[in-house]
Image 1 (tube, rainbow, N blue to C red):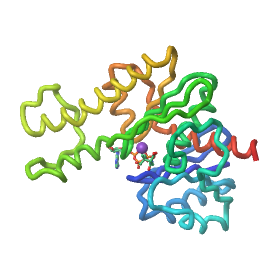
Image 2: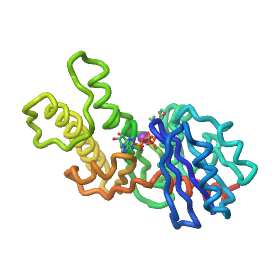
Image 3: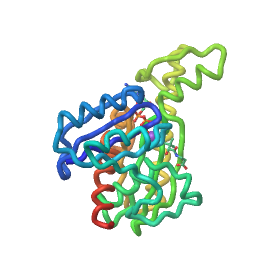
Length: 244
Ligand SMILES: Nc1ncnc2c1ncn2[C@@H]1O[C@H](COP(=O)(O)OP(=O)(O)OP(=O)(O)O)[C@@H](O)[C@H]1O
Ligand SMILES: CC(C)(CO)[C@@H](O)C(=O)NCCC(=O)O
Ligand SMILES: [K+]
């Protein structure tokens, strides 16, 4: 049994797997990392591997305490990945993006894949049908857009995510909701159109904290899987074991 842990810039997500079966999921704050993981290990005493990817300022040391009970694997750029990396700066490519690309390559073999992760940032990652990771894009996520409008202006309030009534905002708040939500939806649909034009056939995976909210608003029908990074960590780990 394994537990996969995704340390994002906003929060931590974890999932327990038996083979490919996802038994239970957890979400918690970085400040309570040690306690929450200990609780998971107590609840599932047959967990023998803990697999972490971190893009935040939570380093490997924070996980060494669990080595008393399980083997700890901190995914790094040096690990074996199931794709050829054609990114210009592979050492600065986010480890979460590498894991998403690996999951896409392993779960959807021999086809073009685009993974869109709508978290703190919205990332786009394209792995082509020859298993070459080509790159993608990084943009601000939904919450980051609301926060930056407020942080960098004098007059704009900080609003909570809300579905816009229309693309024509009739008030300050309606204008902000339209700009943030419709803006991101148009952006994602626009990128999808570009990728679809560029490749004859492509599978698109939408994940991250805002995946479900966004999926139902997109023009393109896309299946949202908020767990794709955690599932990809499980896949990446199984691949590593087979290839070590
Ligand atoms: N309880 C919550 N706390 C923070 N963000 C939330 C919450 N519930 C939903 N969200 C949404 O999720 C988004 C953040 O996504 P997520 O938690 O996947 O980010 P993350 O920590 O950067 O993770 P990752 O790096 O794995 O994408 C925010 O834009 C926000 O709208
Ligand atoms: C873009 C984020 C913040 C998304 O989590 C992460 O993948 C990251 O820190 N990336 C480093 C830059 C890059 O991927 O090129
Ligand atoms: K993200």
